[in-house]
Each structure stands twice: as structure tokens, then as C-alpha cells.
Image (cartoon, rainbow, N blue to C red; front, side, top):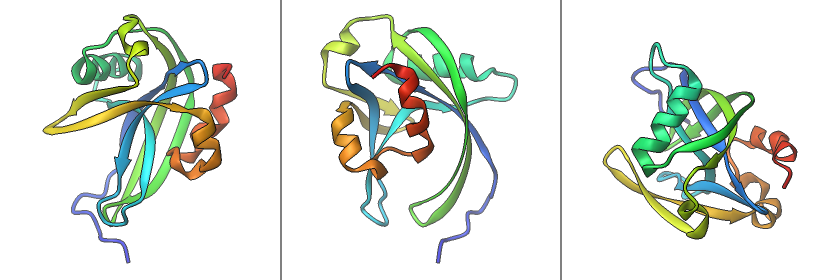
Length: 150
């Protein structure tokens, strides 16, 4: 049975799908309770009074020191999930974008800070994701990959 979170609330976040050929730029994660590994687009929380696009730009600047360009809205995803034994509920504003600085396309693994944790972003081949479709979370992101011209 899933643990109840102390504060059950819906979190509004913004994420960007960025591609390099047939690779997607994704954050690697692992559920500490189940050991399930997954990949997710990068981004973060939208603050009160901030647009989702402004939040996306801020999050990439804070976590990677990266500027984005060619930002285009793809759609809204509602995601219900369990992580570390607790239920989660997110409303995701999903965008496609490109990096301004070419250096982000030249490295296969890029460490970044998320709060006090160091995480890794990877260029993940679409073929790897297609062989294990549940690796990409939330699964609703799959419906937008055609729009990236992969």
C-alpha cells in the first residue's frame, strides 16, 4: 500500500523535450523503494505568478547553466504516479526546445544540481527507449515524439 504524503497537492511543472538526431536529452532516475530505473525530460516547478515557459528557462539556467531557444509548446499532461512509496500528481506543461550553446550537444552525460542532489542528464537513444517503453516517464510523452521529427 502506498504511503500517504503529509501534504497531498497537485504540483505544476514544466518540462522540455530536446533532441539530438535520434537521441533525447533526459534525466536519469531510480525509485529508491522499488529500484525501478527511468528517464524523464528536464525542467521543474512553476512558481506562483510565473509562466510555464519562464519557469522552463529559469530551471535550465539554474540546473545546467543553459539557455534555450526555439521553444514551442507541445501540450499538457496530467501524471498520477507513485515514487518512493508516496503518491504524486503533476500537471505538466510540455515544450520542445533547443540549446543555445552547442556544448550541450557534444557531451553524452551532463551532471546537474537539483536542490542538494547531483543528478545526470543523458542523451538517450530513441531505440533504447522503444525497446523498454516504460523507461520514459510519464508515458504520455510518447504521443509528442512525432512532433520532434525524430
